[in-house]
Length: 468
Image 1: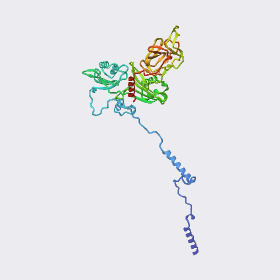
Image 2: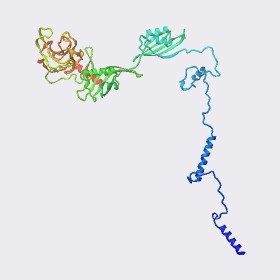
Image 3: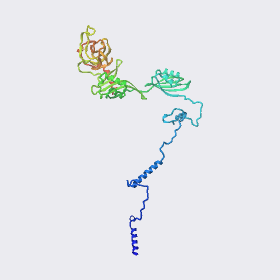
């Protein structure tokens, strides 16, 4: 018995000492938990149960959530027109309404009504004269008819577009009297019409003007005309500059690297208004060809261009006069039968058969004694040279020199044509010595100064003044 009891005791002790999972007296299931970590045991029964639980909860939540509908709103009522105007008058209106409407501001609680609003004693405004003149513009601005007529009579014709500063006085019979008006008549004169002793009077105000000439320089670039315009020359100044150069060279041969230099009269007021005047100096620095320095001069009461770079030069070579045109001689000096009149007469020059438009050049330095129509000779230029010699060029299609101007040998003076008694385009060229026609083929002389040395000195001083 005792051994049996001891055996049972040993078995109990061994059971107590052994790990729990080796002893099982019955199966007890683990408690159910809804918390499942879906990041572990992916694909197991436990993981699928957690995924199903999550999906069920999402469905229940979506079923219980309220529907998606627009929130209820309420549209405000539009303000009445009068109130809306007052709001805009004090600048509270919306941006789409623009800035203030110009109405008087809405009255506050302390405003006391009055029987009539006072009117301003004076009104200052600005107006632009239209095509119908100053008077109608003043009437449209509110001036009285009598004052508008009086102001128009004082001012005379005012160009369209002129800005006028107008001050009107008190209103009488629906219109206001003119207290004063003013405008710029010219760049150096301002007109002021003012009321003095009850009558409108006119006063001219001289403005301070800077009259120093303006100088422009630059490269010809792709086009000399637009280079001049881009440098600040007006269209008239640019055209005058090109015409001056054309009296000496072919402007079409001006290269992009050639540099222009010009000086023109200019008047500039303190407010920046400017009025360009006549061209005084035209020069060009050429890469290919000789440079030019042309200065405006007055000879015989007319303005001319003189090349200051060569004026007064004396050529030391003893050579014949240069041919006036590059063409063959078709008729020589002497007695011949006139091709039109059909009788024998003295041919006092030589004829060159050249195409119409061929340039005609001065045979020697000289001064233009005549440039115009000469009967049967057509358009003719006559040049006076040193030593009592003179040359004439007839039947021209066009002339490019003016009487009194100075020319140098080889300078273009006109173009071949068929004006006057002529059977076709050609140049009739004559040389005179002391008023008598001589054979041009027999003339040889040294070209000399055709200008007085004192005039040469004055021209060079003028060039130094304009282009130091």
